[in-house]
Each structure stands twice: as structure tokens, then as C-alpha cells.
Amino acid sequence: MGYVLPWGQMSFWAATVITNLFTAIPLVGETISLWLWGGFSVSNNTLNRFFSLHFILPFLIVGLVIIHLSFLHVDGSTSPLGSEGIDYIPFYPYFFLKDLVAFLIFLAILLNLVFFYPNLLSDADNYIKSNPLVTPAHIVPEWYFLFFYAILRSIPNKLLGVLYLVISLLIIFLVPFIDSGICQVGQFRPMFQFWFWSFICNLAVISWLGAQIVDEPFICYSKISILNFFIDIFVFLPLINLLESDCHEKK
Image (cartoon, rainbow, N blue to C red; front, side):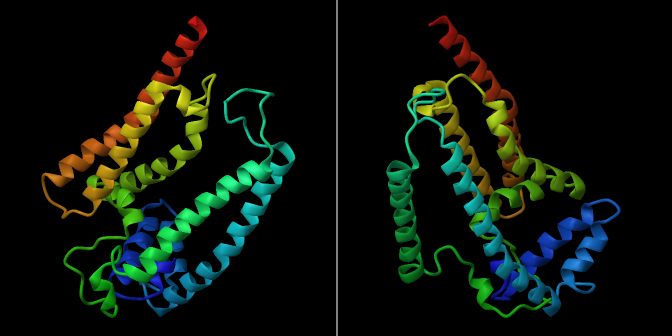
């Protein structure tokens, strides 16, 4: 939502690409897109609606954070050692200080980018005022969308591309059920550690490919990397979980 607010060339065309994804939904897709646009195309009405949503969403996020902290305070967190029923650590001061340190580190990185490297992660074309009659030569979203952009570009069928994109998001919620072994702590699972870092490297490769031009061999590499992404989740992760559980039972 916030990326659209500068209303530059990349902002405009990013809004156009993203809102057009909803047209792939059968029956209601066109209606949803028209509602988001506030007309028959991306315009000033779209900007006003996105600004309103951008203002409302932080309050919804704060509400979810409060609910999360309430459950954490009442039910407690899991044990750092992965054990059940014992070795629990109170939220304060351990988790409070741990999260505070992490917050300060990320805040320092953010402030460093804002004050010293403001253009490092931005696109020069976004300084150009939005023009619906001029399409940028190479439309590239922000770095945090490159993974999803690579999925959309690699699949010719629009509906299948959106479907795979949604699945790649829902996988995040499925991982706790797929990886449901005896020990949930990665530091005691060597095979899981190897899988985890290879998975992170694959995500980085897919994001890098999403920033490249839409041409070979980048399209072929994207398809291979995305296929590997789904195999990692649905094949290798359950297999590692099974192998490590068997090793634990034998010990």
C-alpha cells in the first residue's frame, strides 16, 4: 500500500500489475478489481483507496500484536529446548530483552538505510511522475516482492500463476504441521539445519531472478528454482522430519 503513495512510474505500474491479479479469480475477479480501482483503470481514485487502507492496516496489525502478546502472557511460549511441560522460560525478562535487542538491531539497519543510503533499495524510475501512457522498459517491484514476481513471470497462465503465488503464501501456515517432529529446535537437528540454509539460499536466488529481464536463461532458472521451493517444503521437509524422528527413537 505504501509503495503506491509516491505515485511515480513504478508505483503506478506496480499497482496496475498487482490489482490485475484479481481479474484471474473466476466470477468475482473483475468486480474486485473495479472496486479496488474505483473506476475502470488505476487512477486517482485508486490512490485515495490505497491511502485509506494504508492508514487503517497499522491499527489492525497493532490489534493482532496485542492479541498475540495476550496469548503469550496467558499460555506462555514453547521451551527453547523443545521439551514439553518443563524448562519453560517466563516472557519477562528473557523474551522481552531478546526481542528488544532484535528490535534495536533492525531499527539501526533501517535508520542507516534511511539517512545514509535512501536510494539503495529504490528504483530511479519512481522519481518520474506516473504516466499511464508510458510503460517502463523493465518493470521491477520492490525487493520484498521479487520472489512473488518471479513466480508470476515463470508461469504463462495467469490463473495458475496467481494460484501458485497464493500457495507459496499459505505454505508458511502449513510448515508447523508438516514439520511436527519430536524436537522443534533446529540447533539439535543437523539435517534440518542443512535444509534450512539451502532453502534460504534458494529464496535468495529466486528473488535475484525476479529482478532480471524476462528472457532466457532467467525464465528457465526461475522455473527450476520455484519447483525446488515447493519440493523443499512438500518432499524434503517431511522426509527430514521422518529420518530425524527415526534416529531419535533408535537412540
